[in-house]
Length: 221
Image (cartoon, rainbow, N blue to C red; front, side, top):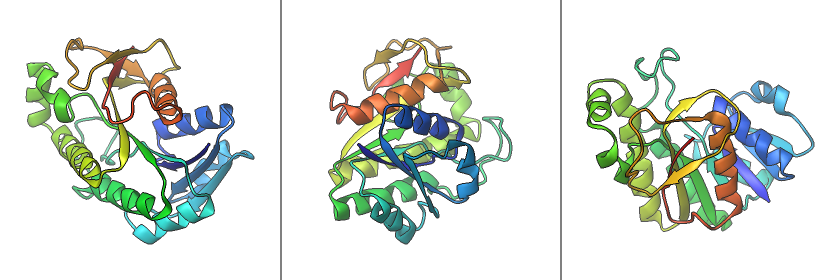
């Protein structure tokens, strides 16, 4: 399987690339700085220099190797690693990037996109604990959630086949047993968490299989 990675230089994105290569897939990563991928280089990985905010850069990545599926692990950069830090990115970073990807998918007949989001996006907002909803609304985190919601809305409107993967609170760590919830996230515990390794594994599973097509599963450990 040929995979285009958007957001592959991030913490979760690198784990996704490792998982893809381990399973024998061919990967093209669109990144601003290919040197950031130096530790990931293997026979199965190619890099394209650029940003998903620029349609020509996205198109160039498709031309390197027309993908069977696109995996997106973008997140809006913050002033620090704190989830409450100020967002230092355009308000539609993820939405505009994904719009460019989806438009290029249509041009090259790529049939599927898998997007990492977060528990609380879309249908799952109503089942996010009320304390967490208040925290989101009163912090800088809401800007990223708004952007994720635009991604979901516009991707669905495009008619392209999608999977939105919505992990609970991310923690560092290797893959563990994963528990899945429906799109609305009903029943997810308030303090549920999931390791980045688990998310990476699930994203690749969703890319390989049609089991989750057209859905937005919430996942935890």
